[in-house]
Length: 169
Image 1: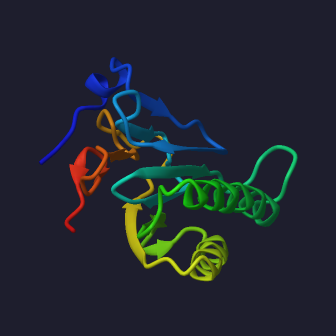
Image 2: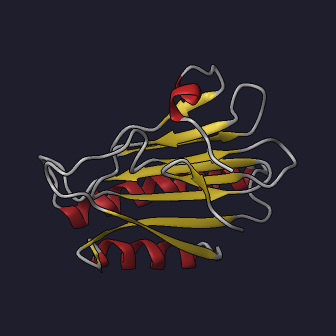
């Protein structure tokens, strides 16, 4: 199964997560999609359950922070969203997904991915790892490439899509 990012952009029940942001919420008529795009080199982190989701888009660095500090800051936000959501009953059993960039057959940000792993393990979450290929500057990209979409409905297992294609469960 696949999804079309253009169609999701038109929906009222989709929340787009910009670079260096974290968003979360309970699956409902007003929230069925958490999505981010233009990852190319960034790492995405998701925590999902049948009741809600969290999505973070983590850049390698910002103009004002180092990469290490940026991943720490954003994972602090992820932990806050998770703790708040768990206390509200959104994450009785949840799974984390780390979508990591691969450049020339190597994880692009191994220290960041390792830090993320340690944080998610402290939350006692099972972790799935997925990878996407970083495109070189000037290399052609198809529409929707380097995107990550969570599609949830209350009480149902969420669908996870990388570059429009559903991940196998």
